Amino acid sequence: MYEFTEDCMLHIDAIDEEHKRLFQMINEAFELVEKTEDVTAIGQSLIANLKDYAATHLAHEEAYMESIHDPELPLQKTEHAAFAKTINEFKLDTTSPRNAKRSLNELLTYLVHWLYHHILSSDMMIGKMIPTEESTEDPFAFTDKYKTGITFVDDEHRKLFEIISDTNDLIHDQLLHDKYDEIMRLLAELRDYTELHFSEEEALMERIHYPELPSQKRAHAAFVDRLVNIDLDEMEDLDDNQQVYLLDLIQFLLNWLANHILACDKKIGEYMRENHISE
Image (cartoon, rainbow, N blue to C red; front, side, top):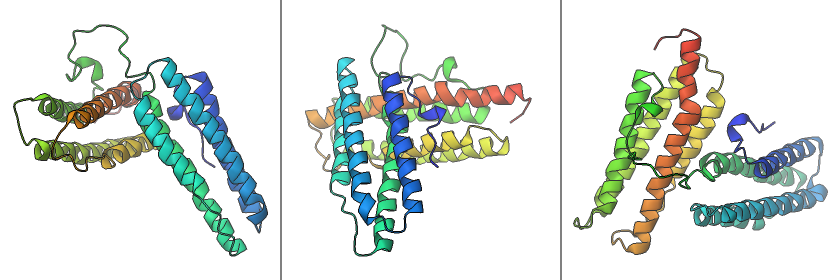
């Protein structure tokens, strides 16, 4: 059973309800496949229903993002298109009942994993990247509002902010030529340090028996997946489009990290203080 947990809630009612329904449909499909010896007859209708509902949901999500002028919409459309391509090209293996069950289970597993990752790495940022008010605060500064009160966590968060800031400065540097290798180095450093930080943070949560560890692991995995799949092919010569792509990417990474710290990581510190747990 795959749960639609609190960490998947965007607090946008229509989208949350459709995400919840998708999880319900996938769970019902898993149960039906488990109970059915030969899924060949029911497989096509299950797939068709999931495709139709997913397509309707993605269209609604894009329409909502367009209505609020969300700058992440183009990226969301790209991810949605890749997802639609995968499920539309899927063919149920009907060579035997066993193969039919196996291939349908593989599709359902792909659907639920994609949904978890997409919600936690992309949908979670819907509406978050739209400036709501003018601020003189440096967005790349690790300020007191991000502090969890856990020394090593705060130090590692500060380091992540610094790497993102350095990358942003490099992208904006109009005088520096041949900066592709340095950009790649910084993004690789960001990925590696992020993985290290998440590993150490999860070890802490496991040690203190933090109840929200599973949801934290899902969010961490989704973010790392986003970093691993950054598409920087053929970017030795940075043109205007690639510059825009990089700036949008940096803005997304910064906003995701800031949002995750404020919405999730600060709760770890609160839990430790409430339960009188030391580092």
